[in-house]
Image 1 (cartoon, rainbow, N blue to C red):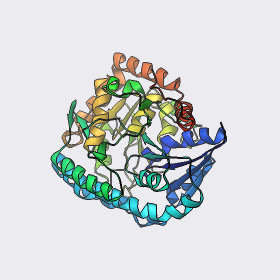
Image 2 (image 1 turned 135 degrees about the horizontal axis):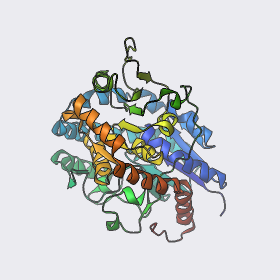
Image 3 (image 1 turned 30 degrees about the vertical axis):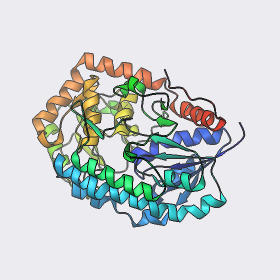
Image 4 (image 1 turned 135 degrees about the vertical axis):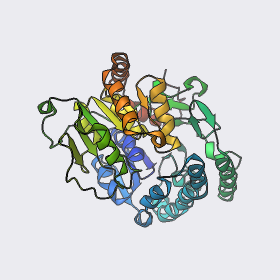
Length: 405
């Protein structure tokens, strides 16, 4: 097909940006132009794909650490209130600033299609203003008229129902009609997770295309010594972006100091500086190593059950012990346990003993590890970036897009 201009809008966090990068590379390999609004942190990664990174002033003004600090110790009721009254409104109001920065650029560089993901509805708003088609991308579970699946139950807490009404009014001012805008689906919705990992997958019609993981097997550039030198099972503990202090590290030290595991603890991007003085001899702490550099050598991974980290673990055949800090991660950890690919340890009830027992189970349960290997085989054979690019091109050509079987 002839080259097209494709604009990509995502949230500015690794779990949102990274799944799109190989899709961008594939589109550019096919001769398309890709533009990608980004902050300073991710602009270089975007440019590595060949896409044009548009650095926005708005992103320099946002301070996500403050939101993480406000959510770090709240219970579920407080979480939903803060998300409904502070978090989501901030994202959606921020979309107007992003639109304001970009409308002139895209008016003179009109895209043929806009891909928008998650909370970055600036892409959806611009598509309407420019009268361009839009495709929704999702890096999390597809969902119908509910917000989260918790303990297997589909739920929309009352604060989110109230926010949904506010959002409908907000979107109506921008020319979007209809109720339930928070659950809006486009004519094509590309879901960047495997069909096998999505629950209730058969309830989604052919507007939803589950393409699977979209990250490739990248080179391992870790400067740490060869894993085989340790003579111990390697436990990767990925702290995640929600941690802002050293409490989780201290709990992990209590659980695994002088244990059978060699522990590589990767600090979260918003975590405070941590003194490594006096660490147990079987612990390493790092803030500049990616999960993918350790996972090929890991026996078990403890993480906050973000979708991206969880799928990356399974891609490398590593069982997951999910310690979710909030409900959106809890539904991922629940799904991991539901499929027998790891264990779910709720953060608020976690103790050093519970965490150690979960890691021991994931390490030594052969049936569980066989299920993980089967999922790994599925993910390794996946062509997510290629399938996503195919769907985008079919959409642009006006061909029907069928759900992946």
